[in-house]
Length: 232
Image (cartoon, rainbow, N blue to C red; front, side, top):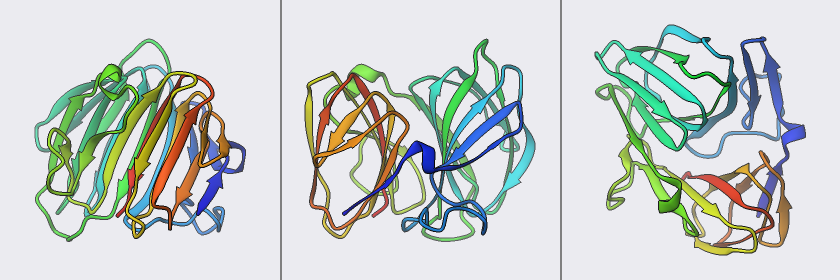
């Protein structure tokens, strides 16, 4: 089953320095149909102005994955970690018993990121942070696991949740088949381009919740960049 969450249907907010759209309801006033999907509870499409960002603030008992679509993200936290994350890179943060961090747009253009929050499989874990580049050519024509809490996903950034983040790039006219256990739920977003998934069209920035589906048959109408969470 495919449950589309078209870009125009998403809740959002505009604070001037931050423009956000919410694939999942983030408050009681949000779209009732945009409910959580297993451990996946937040997927925000954020655009942050040059030189602006989030000052030092705290999290706990949450797995936070950041996928950078455009620009340069600067990170620092109370673990002593510092990093510069660029388009195509992924950042993971296990908040565990508690972590404070700050994030800022360090580039000269608007910063565009997906902020994805997952419930950990257990509360009270050890806080951690990591980042890694994932060149687009490595994801050409196939889904590559970028971050994972499942064993056996070699090369992926580690998270403490029963989920995995995948990315793929497709050229116009290219097709991709991705098997998905019938018991799993997933959420797919078209970061750029246009596709058809199981015969249904998705435009740029649209999302779709997937359940009771054993495989995805994806056709690229345009050159496309795809991001998906397999939420187990």
